[in-house]
Length: 113
Image: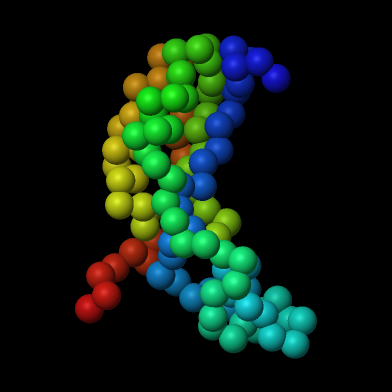
């Protein structure tokens, strides 16, 4: 696909999450039951955040005239856990095509207190 044909972008900006949903693929499952986890992170999961500056500096949104939707979500993390999520959203809002931006979160962001 050529850049000027892109209509939808999807980002998973982080693998960090503070929820411990029992069916989440972030955790080891027990006894082959996807609804029971032992509460420890899956050994193949690396905790990290995407580099927002690198994304915004290299994405070339001006070359995507058909871009109509940007989805910010997380299968293995909550986007709101990214320390620069506001900068990512503010940068994506500037896309010349004025795409609809969706943010999916579990809504449980809180301090460690």
